[in-house]
Length: 179
Length: 188
Image 1 (cartoon, rainbow over the protein chains, first blue to last red):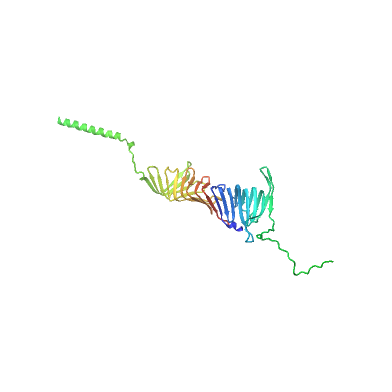
Image 2 (tube, rainbow over the protein chains, first blue to last red):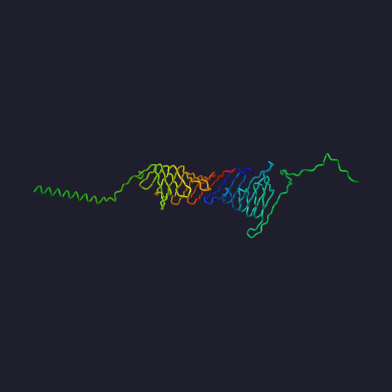
């Protein structure tokens, strides 16, 4: 949610080590990061402060995961973004998350998978809810980008975007048919 | 004749007295004399104490202050409200204090107990640091503080709780153990 940014960040882990000189903090062991609805899990988090004072967090794990609720105009729809990869890089200044290696980004509505993107690298722009996926080679294996976008029309009533049903007009005169 | 005999007897008695004194003097050699105070009776105390430590080049490197110090014959020293302040030039000052403190090894390690606080001044772009715990050990020679008691670590507006710490103010590294929880205040 957009309001997540105004929430404090809570980080939990088994161990912390910090270095005042290089301005880095390393959390290891069952790492959890929470900020509002944003939630990340991994094995190790390297947190650094850029010269401009913004935080950059590199979360690694098998797999490092991320999820966050998205604002949806329809209150009945609980829309979530889920991401997982070997490495997640959170950039506070750009408000982006970069997924590297075994990257997978999915969008769900009320728990139902709607869209999915996989690739070598995916950059997800949290602020604008946009993502850019790139292929590449990893371990000598060529990885292509695959994106699956769920069809908009759905049978179940949960979907809000039903197409408008056409009905015969009550005001217009019927067209004259040529014989 | 009678005077002669009594003189001889007197001399003999005197000689015996001198001999006995010499004998006892030898027996109780001064080196064996030992003042054995009770373990709990101090051999000296001091109030409003301020001790400054200098390095080989004559620069002050640390200062220990205490409201009261009690020293015992077994080289144990207890202190009320001890404060340990680093004076290393070009480095941010570190100031550790507590309700009580003691050392059993002539200051190689100093134990702090009760409302222990460590404050490190801000330095360049890094904000001030502080630690709060109930027990802490200072290692002046290696410029380190350790604790295996619950600790709260503050860095600017962020705070982290842990169940143990190891802080080397010489090279600015901090290690916190146990389930660690950090709270980073929101910027907005």
